Image 1 (cartoon, one colour):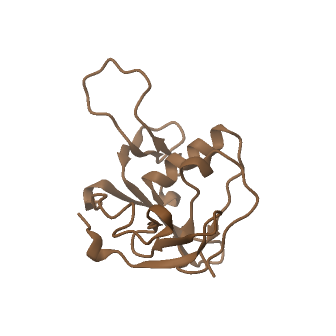
Image 2 (tube, rainbow, N blue to C red; image 1 turned 90 degrees about the vertical axis):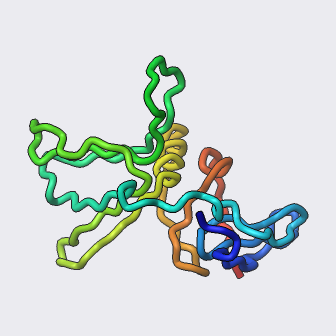
Length: 173
């Protein structure tokens, strides 16, 4: 597990109440404690690191039958005794009517490939990204990519903001 020694907490402007806001550049998570003070560690510092067996690297061009990726959340009602899946569920087929070559749930998925201009492209999806995308889409919100000007990491609205539309994006000063 990562601990607070791994956090790199920086000030990123002010909250709506005028108090400071802090962010961890290592874990890409909120690090603001009560009363606008910097936290000892960020909210994601204790999340278990992803083991290589829990991650998938996928080149969609190798699966002509299609690739589907979605956030896997525990069911509302379940009579089975099996473990509850959460993360990113992936289906991939080599041919349109062929069997699923990939049918599994992962904590992260890295999509790789090339553009029409033969430039290498890479995009990573975390389990939280997939779940928040699903929550936003259920409410009909348009999702778009925004990169943090401070660390260059993709911004994902979480919790309340993933299901409530807002016009303004706070940009660190």
